Length: 196
Image (tube, rainbow, N blue to C red):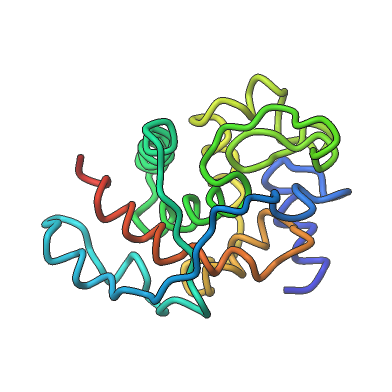
């Protein structure tokens, strides 16, 4: 996507382009590369979830997976609830959860001092200085997910893009390919929690 298109997407979404969102992932050491498991195996156990919507293009590259705490699972459920409230489908939830896995490992992070990327906070490491909202807003899972989805809705044909490209168009990260590694876990989480 060219820079003019990216600027218009972010402008329409009400977000400032300067500085982007997060300049890369947080330094977590708990990621473990794993072999991708076909989503269809998970889907067979979860009636009512359309597996073709979760990973329509297949996963890209090596996949990472982390164990989740109760708080992280609650954040997954909050992302799914916000996605449904926004009138978006399972694929939007997969993109959102994969993005939050990359940005914060699904932890609703406050200011991290010297380890902070500028003023990035919350599940999506959104920046108040870039127009995402106040600190209170972007550390609210419902608000931050809705803000991310608002940006995603403005990406022309995001459903037809690889996950990492759709996420990057909204996030403007210094590490654009890192979102891809979370697609399988995100799809599994959506399959597990979409109807719960």
